[in-house]
Each structure stands twice: as structure tokens, then as C-alpha cells.
Amino acid sequence: GAGVSQSPSNKVTEKGKDVELRCDPISGHTALYWYRQSLGQGLEFLIYFQGNSAPDKSGLPSDRFSAERTGGSVSTLTIQRTQQEDSAVYLCASSSETGTYNEQFFGPGTRLTVL
Amino acid sequence: GQSLEQPSEVTAVEGAIVQINCTYQTSGFYGLSWYQQHDGGAPTFLSYNGLDGLEETGRFSSFLSRSDSYGYLLLQELQMKDSASYFCAANNTNAGKSTFGDGTTLTVKP
Image (tube, rainbow over all chains, first blue to last red; front, side, top):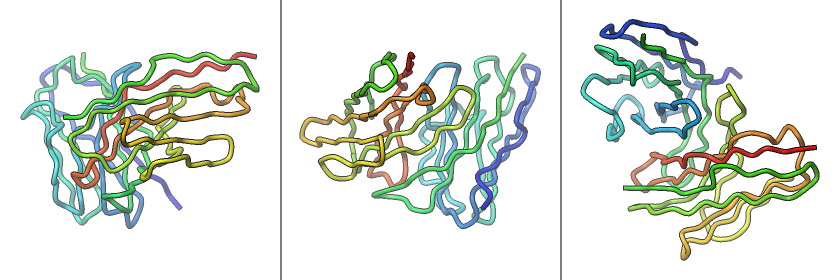
């Protein structure tokens, strides 16, 4: 079946503009995660959804970042007034279980470049 | 908070065995996962330890000791294609959140 998809694959924007990143999880997966990965670095947790609700938003770097999920499926990550330090690869993952064991399936990521 | 420590780089030769260690400090802990990421690719799941002991999956094995807050990934019969970054991730009791280490870059040489 289809894996996790993300769009766009690449986004170049100017400082101060808003961007929207989209994630389509694997069908039936109830959990959805957003991470950020800077070049050569680890994965920085941003936010996690269980269904349409976000029990954990602790990783969002600032109030310029927001995310939503509708219909228990597609999620969008919005970054307002982008800054150069927002440049990174934004990865989305989904999983079918949470708690004791949650193998996460990752999408290919969106590479964001803020000029 | 949570933090995981793993070596930044490891080098080994084809056919050898390599062990990548991971120590963690977490406020809540369910288990330890391992992911592989090739350059430019997405992370892919390798292994999970929810209980102490060794889990074996083909050439890869993973170990966990909760009392020592320590785990490792063991890669046997190394192949060139194993050159990648390897991340340990602590699964939190806060239902679903995973905290990742900074990754270990494994270079396999002929």
C-alpha cells in the first residue's frame, strides 16, 4: 500500500512569508508526528496527533508554528513569518499504535529553505 | 525532559561487527527504538526493545538494560549498504512521543 507522502518536496521562500507543509499518513494510522531535522542533526520532535487532537505540542519552537489534522488523516504544518533558522527538512511520520510500541513510518520530508 | 547520548561516528570494515551504544535520561520511558537513515532518505524502523534483553532481527540485534538506562544496536556481517546514520529513540510514557538521539554515522569500508 501507499506510504506516508509529503508535499511539497522542496519549498523555497522569502523571510517573513508563511508556508504550509502537508502530510498524508498511511491509511488507518491514528497517530501522526512532525519532526524537524537540520543538516547532519537528529530529529527534533515538534508535535504529535492522536486522531485529530494534539496531546503533545511541546516541541513547537514558537507561536509562529501551528499544526492541524482533519478527518483523522491529512495534517498541515504552518509556519508563519518564516525566519532563516526555520530552514530544515520537515519530516512527518505515522503509526498505528501508541503507548508501548509505535513503529513510525516516515515520509520523504519537505526541504524548506528560507532566504 | 529527555536526552539520549550516542557516538557521533563509527567506522568499521565490511564483514565486521559493530555496536552502537545509546544511553538515555528520561522522565518517562516505555522502550527504545532504532532507526536507520541513508543520506537524503527518510528514517526507517529497525528494532524495538520494550523489555530488557536482546532482540534479534536478521543481521541486526538490539539490547536494552533499563537498570542501566542503556541500549545498543549490534550490526553483524557489515555490508557497504549499511553505511548510514543510526538513531536511537526513547518512547515516552506520554503516549506516543519519541525523543531521538542525534544519530551515529556509520561508515563501512571495504
